[in-house]
Each structure stands twice: as C-alpha cells, then as structure tokens.
Image 1 (cartoon, rainbow, N blue to C red):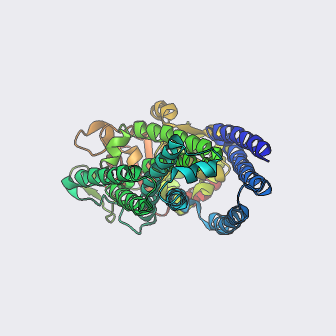
Image 2: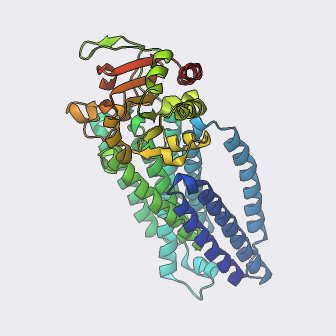
Amino acid sequence: MTIAANALYILAFILFIVGLSGLTGPSTAVRGNKLAGAGMIIAFVGTILKLVGKQLAHDGDYMISWVLIVCGLLVGTAIAVPLARMTKMTEMPQLVAMFNGLGGGTVGLIALTETMEYRGFRPDLIAEEAGVAGTSTILTATVIVGSVLAAIIGSISFWGSLVAFGKLQGIIPGRPLGLGKAQQVVNVGLLLLSIAFAIVLAFQVGNFGNVWWMLGIIIAASLLGLMVVLPIGGADMPVVISMLNAMTGLSAAAAGLAINNTAMIVAGMLVGASGSILTNLMAKAMNRSALNIVAGGFGGGGSGGAAAGNAEHGPVKSTSAADAAIQMAYANEVIVVPGYGMAVAQAQHAVKEMAALLAEKGVPVKYAIHPVAGRMPGHMNVLLAEAGIDYDAMKEMDEINGEFSRCDVALVIGANDVTNPAAKSDPNSPIYGMPVLNVADARSVIVSKRSMSSGYAGIDNSLFYLPQTNMLFGDAKDSVDEIVEELKSM
C-alpha cells in the first residue's frame, strides 16, 4: 500500500507542475486547472491508501482517520461546488479570498491538533507515530517547527483573507483602516509575541501546557492578520489576495512537514512559490514593493456623485452612443480597456458583439489588460474569455502601450486608476510612478462610466478632462448595447 501511495503521490506532483505551467496562458489555463485538480484527487487517494495500508498492517487504528477524511471531502464538495456555480464572475475575487482563507484556517487547526495529539510534543509519542525506534529529538523539532509555522502563517492568512473578503464585498469599508503611526508598532509587537510564545513552547517539550502556548500563538497571529490587512486600501486588494494565497501555500507546506505528509509539502511549496512570484510581478506592475503595500497602501472605495468637472482640470465633455459608434466605425483601430465597471455591469458579451460588428467593417479591436485591473489577478482575462473573445486579442500592458498613439479610438469601460495619466505626470499623486495604460496617447478617448466618482484608489482621474476625452455616462452594458444597435443600423 505504501509503495502504491508513493507512486500516486509522484503522479500527483507531475500533474501539479504541468497544471501550474498551463496557468501561464489564457488558452491553456482551463486545461491546467483540470490537470491540477486531477492531481489533487490522486494525492487524496494516495493518502487514503497509506492509512488503509497501516490499518491492514495493524500499525494502529486508522479506520476513524480515513473515514473522517472521506466524510470531510464529501461535505466540502457538497458545499463548495454549488457555491462556486452560484457565484457571479463579479464576485469571483470574494470567493477566491474566502476559499484561500479557509485553507489557512484549516492549517492553523492542524497545528493545534498536532499539539494536542502529542500531549505537548512528546518525542517518544512522535517517534512511535512515525515508526522510529526510541525517541527522536530531530523528529520532534521538525514537528514543532512545522506546527508553529503553520499556526502563525495559517492564522494570518485566514483572518487577512476574511478582511480582504469583507473589503471586496463591501461589508468593510475599502479605505485603509489603521492606527496611524502606531500601526507598525502594533504589528511588530504582535509578531514578536507570536515568536515569544513559539520559543516558550519549544522549551516546554513534553508539557501538555503547550496547547495553551499554541493557542496563544494562534490568537496573536490572528490579530496580526487583521491588523496587517485592515490598513491596506482597496486598490491594493489584487496584490493582497495573491500574497495571502502564497502564505496559505507556505502554511500548508509547514503543516505537511509537521504531519509528515509529502503531498502537502510539495503542493504547499508550489502554491507558495508561484503565489510569491505573482505577488512580486504585480507589485512591480504598480512600481511598489510588496513590503510597501503591507506597510499601508493607498486606496479606499472612492465615492462621490457625478460632477461636471473640477476647478483644477476644468469641465468634461459628454458624448452619445451614436457619436461613439460613428467614431469607432471609421477608426483605423479600436483599443478596449476593460475594468471593474465592465465586470459589475456584465458587459463583456455586449463588448464581444460590438467588436464583431466593427470587425465586419474592417476595424480591428484589441483589449488592453493592466496587471491589476479588476479585483484579482487575471480578472479581466477571465471575463473576456468567458464571452468567447479571442485570447490573441488580449494584450498585456507592456505589449499594448506603444499602440495607443497609433489608434484612433480607445474605449475605456469601467477602468479608472489604471488609466490615470497622473501616475506619470503628477509627483504629488498617491499613484505617481505606478505604470498605467497609455490611454491618454490615443487620438480619441471614450470613457464609459456611471458617473464622475473616483476609482478604488479614491483619487480623481485626470484622463477625464483631456481635450480628446469624451464621457459616455450610464451603465456599461446599456451603453455598449446602444453602440451595438447604432453599428447595426449603419
């Protein structure tokens, strides 16, 4: 049984890696996700085989263990599948944050269970469980270190993800909620408290009181998770979600180390490494470091009603769907810039129809994707792919930025902060230095937006006041539908 289980683990690891590599491109992402999912099922079967093998070898009573695992899988599947199917694409970031948090919380519970299971990490019990003769200090140290890391990182990820979910869902204000200058002092204090509890726990090996020290670690780390994410503004949520995802992977690897489960170690490290790389890439796309974001980002769900302009920039010009349709019908090229407003309005299918009509008139349409557009990594890519838009038409920021100066019309649908020219021209702007899409270079800009309210970063967008910019006010889907009807009548 053990040999068969290890063989299944190796197969699962191969599928994890191949599946993860498939996620590097939109055209292979679905297949990659399915392969990784198949790998997880195989790893699950391998774990059950190991437990059944030990049961048959009379190496302890594992019947309850594997039965509980199967029951947990069935219950989790019964909850997760309907929830995922009912979740709208606009709410997908919240679902990702919630599922990610549940992973971190589960790891924290595993750490607590390990402490209780071994009555304060007694070396003889740990060695007996692992099948090692006598006692093993190294083995005990491995279990302690793995459990402590799992408890700290998992708890931070769980509560941090809950805060991210609350901000994305609107339950918690998107603006930074912190303690000002005292924030970092509190954060460092909570981290040091967690480490102090861990040190005491390590030197109390064999003492059942370690359960209370482990609870102290979990509580301190949980508070740290809350205090780290609450001060981060909504505009930084895509990076935060990616970072919390990486932390959940690392905590799972630590838990695998504690319970001697190879599948958890490998899967956790893959998630942790890939999440860390993605976090770094997204932070670079904002011209900031991940540490800077954690230390307190800008942002807050900007509000405010429609305005005709402001004293600094002057008035804005509005346009109609008919005028927008005429401009695009006679353009040499149209670049669509999607944002969260398109996701909220579910306008991607209307955009696909509009692009098809323009293509019939000989007008090529491309889509400019900013790395942090939307509320999670790849949000816009997923929405456009759902509508059946060709992957090759989706261009990343570095690839498309040079084309704006050559295109006649740039149509911005619900994007705000990622198109703000102030990031390049205004040193006093909170987003100064953040790479943005060069929409301002287009000969004509049409911005589809409900009102003049600011974006998630809570700052005004100077793009709206440029001479070549016209505002198309209204719901994004309704506006694009009107453009479609105008194009059909031409």
